[in-house]
Length: 208
Ligand code: 0O2
Image (cartoon, rainbow, N blue to C red; front, side, top):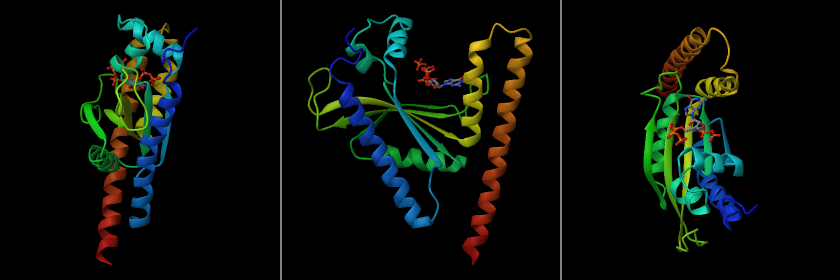
């Protein structure tokens, strides 16, 4: 079977490395300046062929490389996990300013959590990549990248909730959904406290 990404799979990996490289460079810059990294860890992935085909069908779109790369916008996904909520917003500001990166969509599920308790900040970027032609033959190529930014606490909740999605035929579903929401809210409250503690420590250090 032909790839859902046509002849672009290797180029998608290069674009992903290019974007991740810029974010890692910024992390190093901040670490040199302040002694602390801006994020704890970063993971990236190309959406699997099966997931992309399934998503094209679910959205009622043609299953083709043009749909996968120009209609769907999450073939390349990057997740940045920070220790503190403020670091997410510092990173968002920085990402918006990187030359060649255009933010075309943002979803703030931190200030507007999903009803189930999911929290995260999502950005869709359009990247101008000067070293390759995209699926429409444009050069420089234009590629979409989804970036999700979360704290460790938000990431912990999302990972466990995602795992439990496969078992929803269970009894007491309503109670479990409510308990999951309660866990998400408690973790959000911890994030606020941790942020406050760090602010107090930093304010004290600044006095010295
Ligand atoms: P994967 O494997 O993580 O990529 P769409 O992207 O169009 O299907 P929507 O609603 O426009 O859906 O996108 P949205 O809200 O930006 O969320 C897309 C991604 O966010 C999901 O990707 C998840 O990674 C994450 N996400 C959103 N809501 C939840 C949630 O309630 N729980 C968890 N655990 N993750 C969530 P995919 O495509 O599902 O999978």
